[in-house]
Image (cartoon, rainbow, N blue to C red):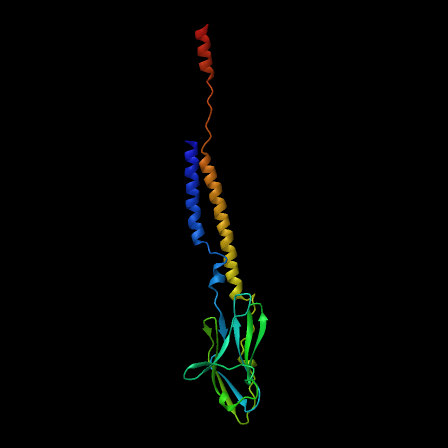
Length: 211
């Protein structure tokens, strides 16, 4: 009977812990669901002088240990990857900001009139807003610094609060499990049996009869 009662208590304990495991957020779930984010201001326009150098860029936010593969496209009738081979006058460059963010540049060396158009950077299933490049005979070169969003701080609210939620969730989970274990253990022990001693009157009665 005692073994059966102990088994029943353990079963109830497991049934109580299982729902807690289901509703408690896993600390690794956010990492697996994290996607790449590409940031470029809407309606960004660059005016460049023919034959000069122009840099355009996109800020890339990622979750993995290494930067993602990002590709520049020129928007025409069909999206065409920009030719950045060794014999092209267009190059790319990656500049890390921190362990989870960086800037991906598209560099036009001796920019041509045919380079005018709209460009996008793609990576990890995400894409930027279109960046317009206008090439003129003689205009003041527009730098790319004003188009780049401020560098992302990994300790900002966007990353701080999810970490806090995970930590609080883990603490709550551990606390609930401990309370359940303690409560169930006390309940399974039951009330201790009281040993009753024969009353003094019973001893007296037996003694009198013997006499």
